[in-house]
Image (tube, rainbow, N blue to C red; front, top):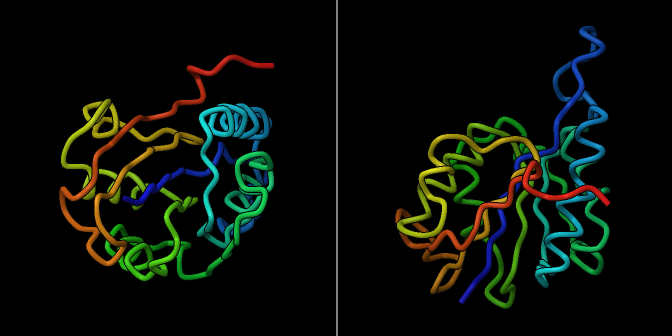
Length: 169
């Protein structure tokens, strides 16, 4: 049994139109949402062994705000995850080592939402995930087999964590 959390980065800022997309930082709303999501995930006991994170500034800033959840995790910040397709993300998940039982992927839409919808054959809040994967949302999935066996409909969507549903400290 494997646990995969797929997170869309927190809300990014568009204040500086001269910045390249890769360099956009988090907006204040994103800097508020990510720690709320972190507290919620840590409270549920999510402790990924591995974090796969896009190299974009907004994703790495999101990762930095997930302190309680990711403490002790081996983080991989990868250029290939920036502008990746759902198929590319799936291949990266399939390449996780067999000894890893829990992973967190922090990336971008539409690829993150696409990966959730491809993997989740059933589960809670699947209709909501089909409609939208908002910023800082996390899809929590269970895969019954090895990472290499991940594929269409192979996972269960256990929950969809939405920052707007989480209370502020």
